[in-house]
Image 1 (cartoon, rainbow, N blue to C red):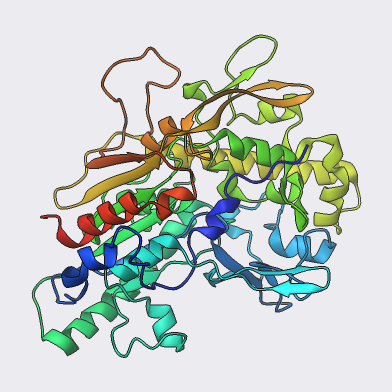
Image 2 (cartoon, one colour):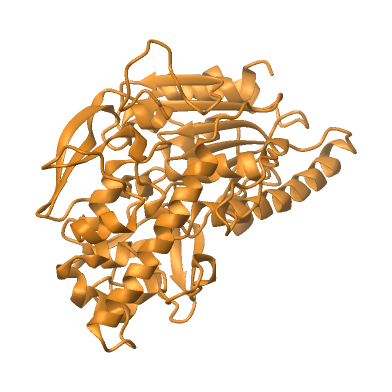
Length: 469
């Protein structure tokens, strides 16, 4: 059975366009009207980071949009050449960071072009979160500079960081470091034009959704450092904290999700539009970084009840998961046409899985080490806990089966958003987590509903615009 990929909803959450929120919803525009008009030098600019699938991908070699449209002009995952454009290349013995192709990110996804039979539509999918920021007076720089919206010269306070969400979050944290350096220089120049020189350095507030929160958390701790190849942890220098004053995470799977394992095994489906098979998804290191931790005991063997170590290649070989499943042989042939032997294609796939698991394990270790935030930086979480969410699986030779649901937003379980280390262990009253939360807010909302919730909008704008530092 094909499952809908658990992060497909992110596409609908982070799209371009900071526009005014409908004042009928909680009168946010009225509540924050005065604060929204203050664009003085003391106000931090905003960076918005989308989750997985939230950035367009374009193949420079063909000019096709690889992700971001379902139309005749766009790539289709069942066409071999198009599938290879979306899949990350695999090469025996090559490091993940060295696996380059001609596909790149091309801006945050502002609309999704869909062609159904004879009809073609381009539904606008402006993010409710960005509409909320619009109510706070933040104007999207990309839209202003492109001329899509006339903001006059008032479009230097809101930026969107698009990235190639197939690749490791640690790689994208390095790109985020470069992005922030570029935008800091730009904002500094704009402020000097408007208000004169200032001794106060530019710092950013960042709002990150879903997997984007993992990119931001790694950057906060390590700046642009790569994961060390020798397996050691990167230097915890809090380089990103020097640039970020407030980091707001929305529905971030800090402890991963069982849905990522299901997708790596069963692929993902957009009903009536396209299927993305397990072999294609299995080329993407970022999805392995979304796997849950073994210590939380969320995947167990159906026969013995023992906890399954998801980061072990032996586990993947034992259960024939992902690209190693017999049913993926034809899909691997499509991705690796130059390799004529089915056995050799399997060797390449096994090598790629092992590299992705090693990378994910190192990434988890870097994020999970307990650490106290430096003074002057705050970390806030908004999460949902009212929807029954897949949280545990049973593994057997016949596949994976959901064995437990618990509180969450329908996509991310509550314990994962919190990174609650009590999961899988004896319960204690006080939360145990390696993340130094400054504030946590739970809303009775779904994954998509969170950013549409007026209480979320109200609390976010208060945090960004009025709450004392």
